[in-house]
Length: 109
Image (cartoon, rainbow, N blue to C red; front, side, top):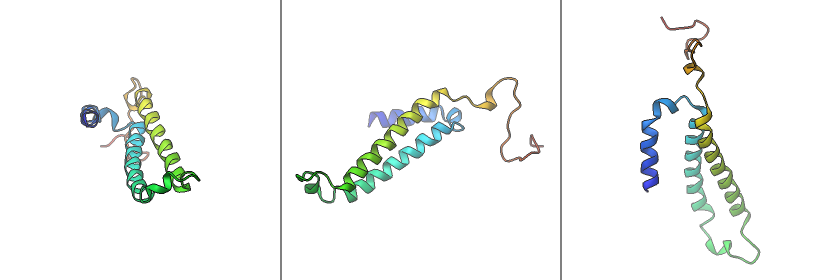
């Protein structure tokens, strides 16, 4: 709970810097996917917990859910690490800023 609260406060403090960062957006998307995965996993795999401990091994749905969970969390960790290494091209000195939504017309009037 403390980690969640501190993470939210850190995100608020650097939101203006992180909003344009594609890795930040991927990380937030990954967190949404992880939440959705947990809800689906809880309803599908944990519906029958005795099947998880059967001598034949866990069911295929549990294996798929575990693999998907690992992929999601490794992606979240990787994106979190890459946030620090991404430089916004608009912040570099000597470069003209890129104005989104203006097409080829350039700066807004």
